[in-house]
Amino acid sequence: MTGYDDLLTAVIAGLLGSLVCGSILHALGELVVLGQLVGSRGTLEAWLFLLVGGVLGAVGYSRGVRQVAPLGFFASDPRTGAALGLAFGILGWLLAIVVIPRWVLLLGFTPPIVPVHWPSLVGLLVYGAIVGGLVPILRTRFD
Image (cartoon, rainbow, N blue to C red; front, side, top):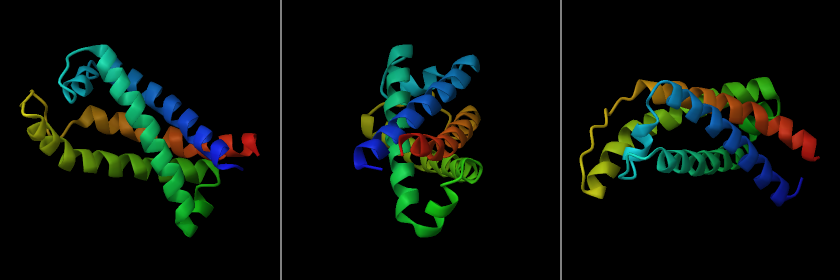
């Protein structure tokens, strides 16, 4: 698999995972929270933020599991990849709890964002499982 194929795999998995995550947050009426992170109440900005972040996260996941030998082995199967993706989603959510409040302060505003946002945990778990499960499936399709 070439580097381009690996990147394309991560982008596709990230977009699909982000679309499902965003659909969950939208159905729960919580998508607007993502827009608030970039200083907007608009749905379009929330979707753009989510899609870009989802692609970057999937690229990081894909590259990360390939760099760590035991994780690369487990991530090569869709089932164990989905389990690693769940762990990735939890890690992302925990990092968001630490980073987002500081990010909001750096932006110079205090929107009504709850530091522990439970709907985003659900979205990130689903996102992680999709990315973790799709990456090995797409890799075999490109090979």
